[in-house]
Structures are given as C-alpha cells and as structure tokens.
Image (cartoon, rainbow over all chains, first blue to last red; front, side, top):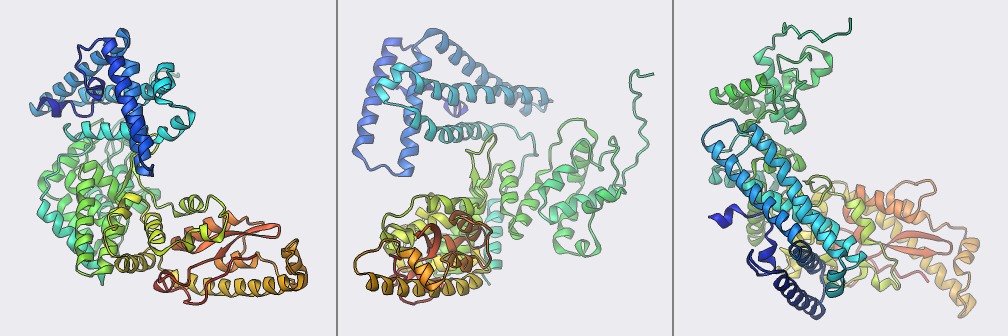
Length: 195
Length: 369
C-alpha cells in the first residue's frame, strides 16, 4: 500500500539497489557495478529503436542517482522534497475524502509535483550525464543527451500520470465507469464502420 | 477620476435553456473546445460575465433546427437536464474558480467524437477521465478479435481508432494527442538517399516492407508490432484495407501513379537507347536525354502529385503527396536525374504488395541509370 502511494516519485536509492542509509562510497560502488553491467549488455545486443530508448533511460536514471546521492546536500534536499511531496499528496487525498475544499491543496501540490519531477527527473538526469564521473563510466556524450531529451520528457510525464491516476478528480467529476457498457460502445462503433 | 473600478452591477440574466442547448450542442458534436469555453470565466453562460449569447459572435455555440433534431443532441440534452448534472453545471457556472466539468457529459462528448472520427478530441476527453489507455486497449482487443475472425475492414477500423486515441507524452510543454503527421514522417522515411535502388523502401523484401509500411501508417512501431505474429497474407490484406481507410482518394492517386510509371518507362527506354549509342560511357547521360528528347524529368513528381509546385524540391513533392495520400510515400523513392533530384514511382514486381493496394501489376520500374 505504502509502496503504491510512492509510485511516480522516483526513488534513486531503489535504482541503485540501496536503502536510504547507504553511504556515498556504497552509492559510487553500486553505480559503477550497475553501469558497467548495463554498458556490457548494450554492447552485446542489436540496438533497435525501442531498445535504444530503454537503455538511454536506464543510463540516465543511474547517472541521476549518482549525481544526487553521492553528496549530502543534494541527497538530503532530494529525499526531503520527496517525503514532503508524498505527505502533501496524502493530506490532499485525506481532505478530499473528508469532503473538504481542496482547491488550495490541489494547486500547491500540482505546482510542487511538477517542480519535483522537473528538478529530479529531467534536470538531474541531464546534469548527471554531463558529470565527469558519470561520463567516465557511462561514456555519455552530447549525442546521448540529444537523443535522450524527448525520452526523459516522456518519462517525466509518465511519472506524473502515475501520480495523477490515484489523486482525487479535480478538473472533472469522478466518472462512474461501467466497463461492460464501454465494451458495448466499442463493439457498436466498430460494427457501425464495418459496413 | 481614475480611482478604483466600481463593482459591476449584475443585471445580466442567462436563459438556462440556452445554456443547456449550447452544452448539448458541444457534446453532440464532440466539440471539446466549445464545451470548455462554456465554463471559462468569460463564458456567455456565466451570469458574472459581460459576454452574451445573443451577441452574433456566439451564434456558433447554439444549435440550429437540424442539429436539435439529431439523436446525439437529444441524448446530450437528456443528460444535461439530469437533475444532478444540471445542479452541478449551475454550481460550477456560479463559482469563481476553474470549473470541474461533469464527467457524464465529458464521456458522452468523447464517445460522440469517436463516432465522428475526431479522435484527438476523444483522446483528450478520455485522458481527462483517466480511461484513455483502457478504452484504447479495448479498441485494440476487439480489432484483434475481428482480424482473427477474418473481418479485415472492422479490424483495420479498430486499429485506426485506437491509433487515433494515442497520446504523445514527450510533446512539449505538455502531453498532447498523437497527431497523424504522415507528411513529416515521410521525410524521415526518405531521409537518406538510397546508395542503390535496392536500398529504397519500396524495393525491400515483402516482410521488411510490410513492417515498415504498417509502422508508418499506424504512426507507431509498437502498434505495428502487434501484427507481427500474423502471417504475411494477413498483414498484406490489412495493409491494403488500411491504405483505403486512411485515404478515401487513393483511387485518384493510383491513376496518377500509373501515368508516372509510364513516364518512368519512357525514360528507361531512352536511357537504354542512349547507353547503347554511347557504349560504356555514362557521362552527362541525363543531360543528353533531356537535350535529345526534350523531356523534363520533373514531369514525374508533377504527375504523381497531380499539380506543379513552383521551384518544388523533391521533399516538397513528397511532403504534399504524403499529406494527401499517406500511403503514397511507401511507393516512391528519391532519384537524381542529371542536375535534379526528384521522387519517382517504385515498387517490386515480384512482390504481392503493389497489386494488393491497387497499383498496376506491371513490370517493375527499373532504376534510372
């Protein structure tokens, strides 16, 4: 349940297979191991468009993880922002469930979640890719960055969507979906056009 | 003199029947823009707005007699007039904050948009309701079932609708519905000049061609990959139907394509003649053809498109051709003849693709020298 509530708030400790008490040395060690495994895997397979996108995203995530977690200041700021946002989301959902006016909470959460994803997904991934230590291990260069920009944007929006899916409806009232009726609608539309 | 503005005196009365009719019209027509507009702060449907429905500039928001008699309008009006929905609409129109749209109407609007072929609007509305992916998957599932049952037209329609409901999450600055931009994709398809004619898409082996053609027309390799497991004949039948459903004017293109093929064959005959006359040397062959025979190779793209683009480069012809007939981009290739680069018709004579989509089952067009 708690894990579901955190979906969408990228957890870079998890990306490196560590917990939040990991020391900078462990962060570096795990990053190097995982990046080397990934680079070896990339070298061994035929690169299709789909694989290229997936590998670029995985590399970018590892780079961002090292960039954010190896230094105390950045790491504390990231982890504290993440916790604060998760708490704010919970507060909003509780208020909505209690039938309270949630307009201000919604606005505040929406602006914060966009800022969080922009800062700790796209920006951190691109900054990580330019970092000397990351470049050394991942061979990330300007061509990677060029190809990755659209992929990172898409990933950020996917995370936003994951969060949005469990939030109270705001722009529209909560729909009451009858999926049997939806299936009949699709059947009707296809039958209508098939003649 | 220029002090604080006086609070506006609210003397405006909005006729609820007019509001209901305007909402029902937008829903019936699958018009999300007008539907949203009716809830905006300056909407004529709001009593605190200075805009009025009786202003001629808002006439387009109101239904005419024909519109009012449609089944879609009647159904939309029934839901607008539902007690709970109407109470919600009135509350939202009186509040000074972004309105919360009634989901019942957004759903019906999306459904009507699908029926009317306004897929990007439907995608936006379903996305707002957070059901877009599942609705899209339902279209795919039923389309796959139709294909399994041999109902090609129904299956293709399902794929086209599901593709139309796709979202582009990488769009900047916000995700947007995926727009069918074949004219741009055609340029990517022919981005590299083929070093030999065999390298160009139309001359690829049937399976390779089909994979690329389906990815191009369905706008997404992942969507095309859903068909991978099907036999070649099934994919071929799917492509033929897809070409027709993507382009109701395909027949007109076929006629022009055949004329362009004839022009290409004339060029080929002249080139062969010139080669024979000059022995092994091919230097300035194209110019020689032009000078000796007085024919401009630019007639070929003009014939394909059916009109001339002044000073048109090959890519301009390709772009416009793909805009008008999406599948046309699959049966042409770039070709330098003399000083000019043009697009020419190309297809494999030993492949069943060209006959399947209605192009001439004639001899393959040889690569110009």
